[in-house]
Image (cartoon, rainbow, N blue to C red):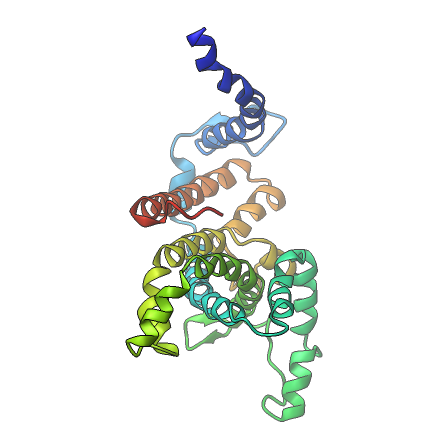
Length: 300
């Protein structure tokens, strides 16, 4: 009887484990194996070539370019998505008339399909799009800005095309992370702010002295989640720039897709995927460490 009770929960988990095994774990193991093979002709069995794909990856200038773009994406998007949604959450947490409408407005981009959002923003960024029309009307940039068609770099670091795509990611993610922060803010007892007000801590100061320290687990969680999402960015790049111009907006996930489905370099794409897996694994381990140090009560 004891053995039966002990294994009963695993029997309920068995169907899900079988589905995950067939759709996730087995393909992942196959991809790991393919990264050590040559599999250019899918009609022929893969040929074992050892670490040749990794040596090729090490010498691939485009791969290092995509890795650089992904790092720039990470550095440019994550800090904004960590702090800007917190400001929005503090704003919509106020008990004012019509605040529910603001919450809905800020969250609306989250439920919009990235395909729809990408196409809409691509129209806005067009040479004769709304943004350039506004700038030309104001006389700021008479010739317009090549948002998605120029490899030129802002401040010599960030390509304009990549920055334009990053803006869409930020726009779409603000509402999602705002909700996470809003849950954290509403868990802070009002008595804490009332006691701080008696001690002279009010206005912006109370958020600096009370809100930020108490929201640290949420800040850390959002930082890790947004970092993982930024590392895996694909849809925005695929829809808006296709990695161009001159690879200036090409990320590591888009390069993986390009190698696998455009060039049919299956084994090389698996090698890129393995590197991406190690990067995301590191970020995931970081998240687990952060949760153990004080964010165990947060779930998304």
